[in-house]
Image 1 (cartoon, rainbow, N blue to C red):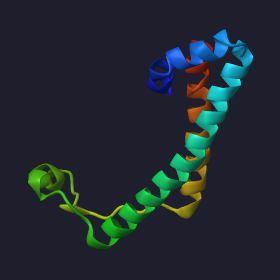
Image 2: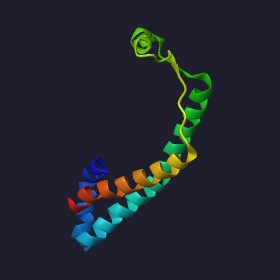
Image 3: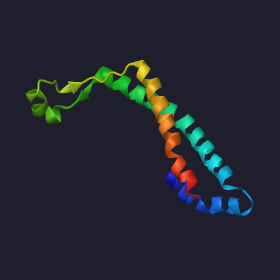
Image 4: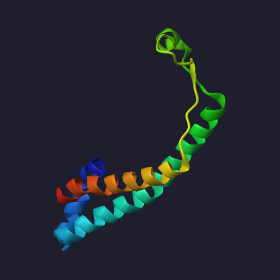
Length: 109
């Protein structure tokens, strides 16, 4: 969001020049961030779930560092598993951090 605000500095300045106050610019940026995170969080979780489902069946081959893993008693293949309740928690955390991270750039203009 910080880069999006920096790239649109002239546009936001023009909006303020024609009468939009700082609180409305702040709200505009927060609403934009809200909708971006509303689309981005579920998309990322879906892609993550698909990747984990694929690699949980086939495994991730770590034979390139096999000697180091075997010295601590681990296998060369790992099979990731995430419980469904963590998807919901992760989505909420990502959504909240995105909104919190948008506060600084939205105060900037």
